[in-house]
Length: 325
Image (cartoon, rainbow, N blue to C red; front, top):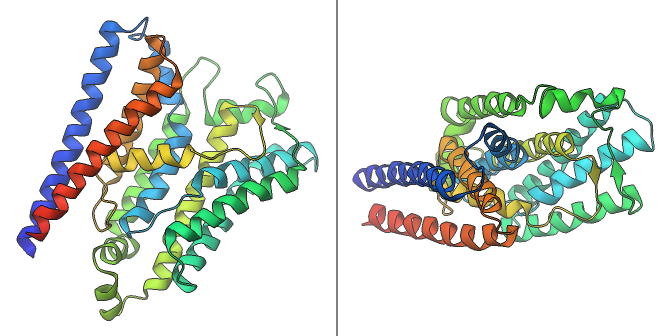
């Protein structure tokens, strides 16, 4: 069993290395064949377009390591964003309070997911599918199906865009925030009891329960973390975009999940790294900007990302078979 575990961890490192290699190869390829891809502006765009996906991916990594899934993270992020917009535009809250409300709303839905999965014993797929529809509808109800608008960069309240997205001299300040919370998440996952229990639950939930771990409590905390990161993603999203349309967010969770899988986190649970997740997120961001530089539309990114995800899952299945053998 120990040999199998070492083999699986070794293959995880190999998959992460392959993802990093693919990231470099893609960047070089698009630099050669893309139109003005190798430029400072494109590099900043690659970083900027990955912020909210990166935050979602960091949060859902915790969930997937436990063997769960969160299909609601995209609509949860948009729900927090649109309710924050209602607070700012209709309730006349200060922009800082509206942004904090966004994080609070998303974290609360993360808590609801955790209770549904851990306490009510719903399958994560079904529980979060339901929450996906609830968050999508809830945002529309609160906003009365009206598009919510945040302040622009020229508005006095638009200061938060320079704080969370880009500075006035086009420095991608959001990268600092993503790096900061990556470091915090890394410490939590690798240096705390919560992190150890997250891996233990994903490896063998029943064995973790028999060893005295209060599985339900820790699983709830994992989903709360995922919701919190969805809230951070909502801040990144509204920092990049001014208008938030109700009823949106479907499909964004797939981009986050794809980044996690490409980075080597196993869908069967028990194995994963946040560094691999970040590599996967930036690989997709390079792919998106690169295809644009070659005058190919967004559906090509979806098409090619699908092949990349299938390849990552095949490697994951091979890793599971090797560790079992």
